[in-house]
Length: 487
Image 1 (cartoon, rainbow, N blue to C red):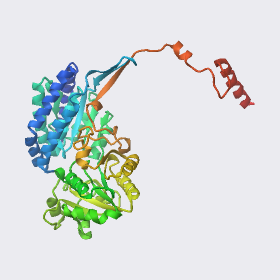
Image 2 (image 1 turned 180 degrees about the vertical axis):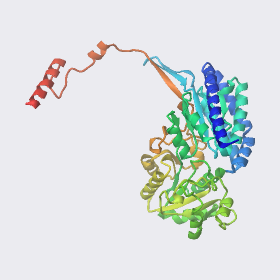
Image 3 (image 1 turned 60 degrees about the horizontal axis):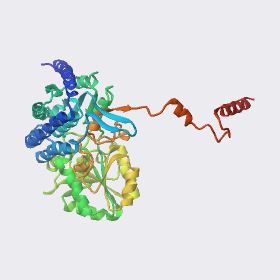
Image 4 (image 1 turned 90 degrees about the vertical axis):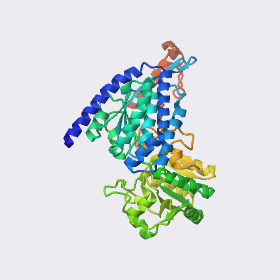
């Protein structure tokens, strides 16, 4: 089979899946909220029951992260997401306001194209299937080539359960021949209503450029600011818990630590005590070469790898028990790897004079990369927290919690989600944690409550600036002023 043959087969597969999904969605549209909810529950249960098997398959195929943590992500994507959406009304009449005489009706979008990354492949597939079906939409998955087998297996598991619960078979499908041309066909097809894109910047940009409405995410580059009133041991624990969870592949995980000068030594000591290894200047430069590729993108050789694997790659000798590699840094820029997103247990470490300077440093880091995504602050000073909330260009400001788990709603009360919008500042269409309500249109039925005569009666006839008290006098006054200006 030639490359051209593969491209053509991928295009044809995309077209066939879209046609089948459109027909299946028309059947979904006839189902009641109760019937839809049974399908979603079945997907959740299948995802949860198979959480360990799917996690192991994903870890082996991608080489990213820890299968034990992927089990937890699969459980979160099925169980926690289900609990958050099970009682939502998404089908039919959502709201009736008899006093205002307005009715809201949930309308499915149609067919959704879901792009799935290799970093969180099985959990993202379970999650996107649930929120799409909950909203009455059919979904077609476009898998990352490096995770195609685990994604196909996840789709098989949840589809089998959904069909048994009454779901039309073609409402859930997945491309099996991954190719750029096939994905482009999927994204640009007139019968695809929305693209739900999770993955690298280039892929998300392609989704937004397709001409089809899209919900995408940008890169994360969240700084973690430890303010002087923070519980430092607990702050470091939370940061390390987050950065080592699945070896740092969740985009909301911390990418740098920013501290005030007055607590610098205390934080360094605590980091070292909890398994943080501060690189020497030579080691810092040595590892730096492996973080980014020559084209400025993250090096996949470090993504989701353990500190031992990264140290071996960069030929570093690190102590036993090292959990996170830390580089002291003072620069920020596209050509400064430590100031960029690093989906691995690697952190930059910045020291600033006070919280105001730390605030500016965090903004600088976010505008360098990660605008609109996430920032983490560890503090007991509510005024400082509020100041950060008012100024930071992020969609999620997380307080005293691990970034990776707080951002997705596992350790916070944010909407549980594995697609995190970055808002306009991040170049995306929403700042929400994406849920079913982002995947429906709302049709509003509005009854007339006034007549034209009512509008005229309620229109003020006295304009104070002209000192006139009826429409005729108002018009005459305006005409006189215009004529006077002309002369």
